[in-house]
Image (cartoon, rainbow, N blue to C red):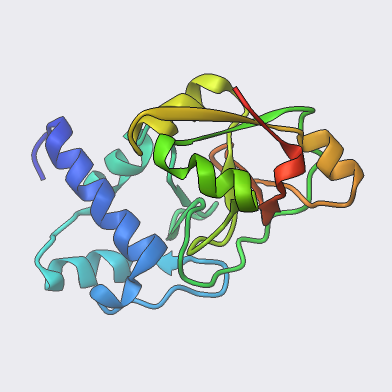
Amino acid sequence: MAVMNDKELTHLSKFLSLVLRHQPETIGIQLDQQGWVAVHELLEKSARYGTPIDRATLDVVVESNSKKRFAFNEAGDKIRASQGHSVSVELGYESQQPPDILYHGTGEKSVASILSSGLEKRRRQHVHLSRDIETAMKVGQRHGKPVIFKVLAQQMHDEKYRFYISDNGVWLTDHVPVKYLLEL
């Protein structure tokens, strides 16, 4: 495949998010329990679906994705999404001690719900949290006027809530009750 522009990279990244995070059945692949699929199978089924990708292009998409949404296994023969799945997978992350404070960005329209029930994973496997305000702001902007919540992560951890960190540095937990949230 020729050199790709940003629009083409974004299109392929969204396609990979669809099939590796949400709807693998779209192209007829099946993720294993940890979310992995063989690279050769992904490439073959993508081509049959009408979205041909060669290995060099796949490498570019994985390496250039600013959010590091995708990862290869050590052998480089399997690929998976780093987090954000709406399909059931066990990513194999070990529980980690979080920093004292983490952040969550959202849109203004979600604030009332969050202040009522806390941060919920909804259709995803985990609530996603950022280590810095800037990242949370970028996430929030995707949902309208951004609102940032400060998450008292260390306090949650001390009270037996579990945290995980994905391959691309996103902090994950199952739920953040309202008592651990401060609106910035």
